[in-house]
Image (cartoon, rainbow, N blue to C red; front, side):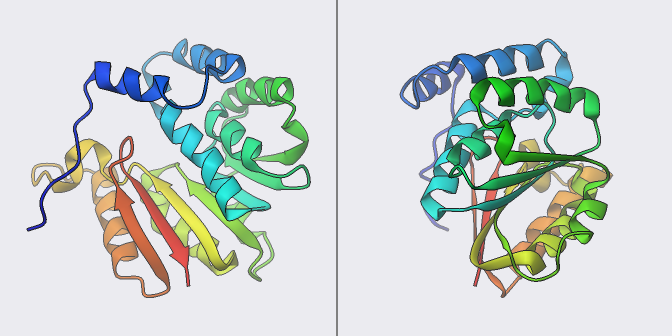
Amino acid sequence: MAEIKSLGLSPELHRYLVAHGPPPDPILDSLASETRALGPIAMMQVAPEQGALLTMLVRLTRAKRVVEIGTFTGYSALCLARGLPDDGRLLCCDVSAEWAAIGRRHWEKAGVAHKIELKIAPAIETLRALPSAPHLDLAFIDADKVSYVDYYEEILTRLVPGGLVLVDNVLWSGSVIDPDKNDANTEAIRRFNDHVAADKRVDSVMLPISDGLTFARKK
């Protein structure tokens, strides 16, 4: 077995990590604060360092056509949109207009609203309505877990060669290796992880970023 080199993060170490990332951002901070006010459901928001990574990955890949499955209150969408060039476009898919409205206000404040198209509908329907030819450069999946494989397949068909799919929550708070956890979400994550690991169409890596983030690059 390979030597374990990853480091568990205490709250103090996480604060240190965030403090040594991008400088404080009033708009992201405001969005995070409004999201926290929603209560326990706020845990669906991506972590600050994960948001910063999304911005960097969009810039590194020079992506211009991006899709996000699961927008919630718009934190990750704001981070993705900030990485896009001015003529880049982000398609956000969610089913809650109420939560997305929080994001819309902050997208406007950040000056990126013109890059974002929000579709309030089941994401699988939105994806299947897109042209089937490869045209997407990058995708971020962070929605209902039981549909992960379906989302992945619809996106991969439309992803350009060299395009990148990012998938959140693939460690599911450690439940993926707990034999006593057999609920629908946990089983769906396991099924998705096995699916990607066996997929010869992509190069993939799973990293312990936040709750686990998989990178899958289309060959």
